[in-house]
Length: 87
Image (tube, rainbow, N blue to C red; front, side, top):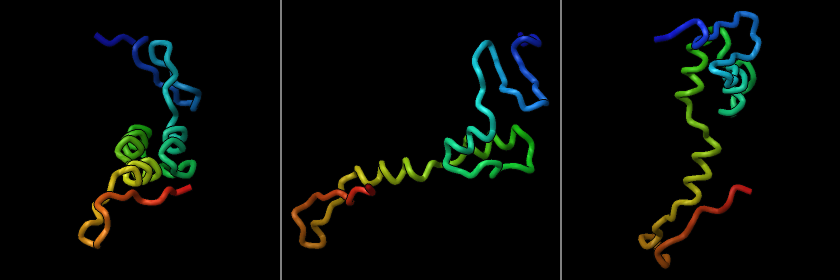
């Protein structure tokens, strides 16, 4: 059963606390995903969280893909190589 202590509605943009744990703001979620501040502005806060949560962090995916081996036997290579580092 939910009580008014379990749910926090803060209309003044102060940090949200639920059970003593601070919830990320939409801008913090945008920054974690690599988006500019207020990129999701113009929709409800729930939709902002949904958009950030459904996004794919391109930098992380690129790093993972660069760690996967490639098979270059079809091109006359020795079998396995890796993509060059992005740094």
